[in-house]
Length: 247
Image (tube, rainbow, N blue to C red; front, top):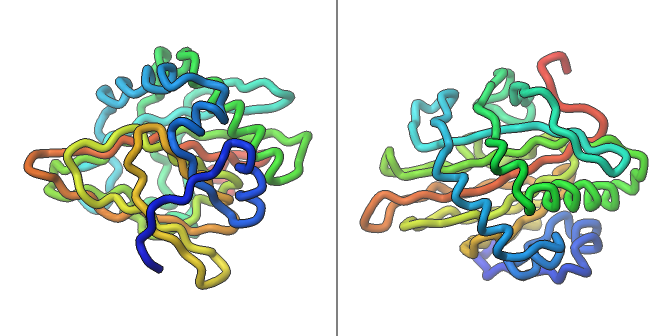
């Protein structure tokens, strides 16, 4: 599996690439076009990553991750935020942090009311509906703002290793990279030998994954000369129900 420059999709073939290959990558200009959103509107979101609380649930003892988390329901073409809830995954999908109810601080209202936010969630819901050909679906959406920094000398975007998330669709938006090396994305076919390696560097470029078919991870980051960080927005969509501790 050799390191490659990303092979970017056009906004018109996102759905076909997801169905045929299990993932696709969009550059920032295509993301804006796909979302019917301006680059200015997307960039207006980026400052919110400077106000993320520390993740106090890291079981590897690290201090390199900050995050916020909020949840939504998309049904009948309407996206509604649900009462704040803990993030939970089974051990099957997260061997490091699975089985824990992790209650993070919510995403700030200023982010949720920004012009780009609803466009992101609405388009992802439409894409998940097309992917699963499930036109009456109720999509359970979880949005995570992450900052991985080099406070510890190294930062781990995916401390749980290569994984699936137990959802239908995963979106990873690259918000910002600052003074780091590493952070390579690796995408594997869950049922075969195929895989690709690439590094997302452009702000508001995007990786979309059919989570039932693909395994993914990102390699650790290290500082270049000074402390650095990697900001991402990760949005997952699961049909019908959220994962919860009663599963």
